[in-house]
View 1 (cartoon, rainbow, N blue to C red):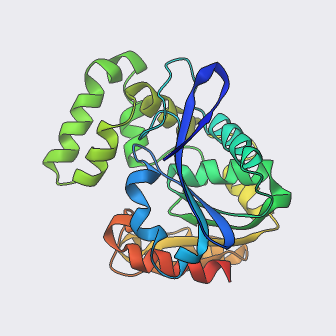
View 2 (view 1 turned 90 degrees about the vertical axis):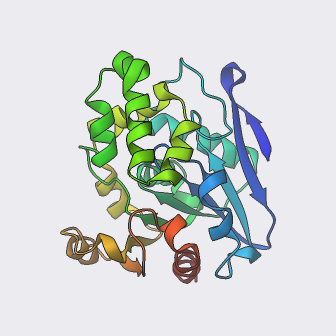
Amino acid sequence: MKEFKLKDNVVLRYHDLPGEEIPIIFIHGLGCASSFDYPQVATNGGLANHRRILVDLIGSGYSDKPELFDYTIANHAKYLEELLRYLRIDNIVIFGHSMGGAVSIALANCVRDKVKAIILSEANLDSGGGFFSKQIANYSESDFIKFGYANILQESISSGNTEWAAGLSNSSPTAIHRNSVSLIKGQTPSWRQIYYSLDASKTYIYGSESLPDPDYDELVSHNINVAVVANAGHSMAWENPEGLASIIKKSIQ
């Protein structure tokens, strides 16, 4: 695992797996970590020939978890832009899942001239958040830190959502809450509007168990390539990593 030092000595940690083909940066969702979610995806479906950058966002996984960072989607994207500049990458594929999809769109907007393709899986495109971000943001930040985090962690374990519980247990409660608030607040223009405006190749991925979805036809109408991972729901990187990797590879070609 490699390290990149941001301002105030905050350390971003990531895997940088070698490959001769165009780099792919993997950006994970709320309460997750790319170091946990994507090693199996990144070694399947022909992706092993690509340079693969698996980033743990600040506040998650093995990266630092500073209390003073605001954990907004926009500022996650800003330090990822710094990382790409540091790595001297001028041609990139961006993959983002769920909350990581919003971060991916914000990042792509910052580095439009460098993006060959942006691939999203069940991403946040609009304000309002999703199931877990709404649940988390219903707490005040102080209450979430005091007891809400423990409650949601225990609920996840009890319901059998142990993979997310593992990622959540290695995430900062402060980060999780502020991430959720940022997702619900959204931005103007929206992540959806920015996504539609990007000139890069665009693919949006659903898990088959997440369908039907009312947004499917809307995305198709805006010339988004919509693909489906079989035998998977929202957590497709865990449920069918080979299928997800295959679609990512097809979306780059």
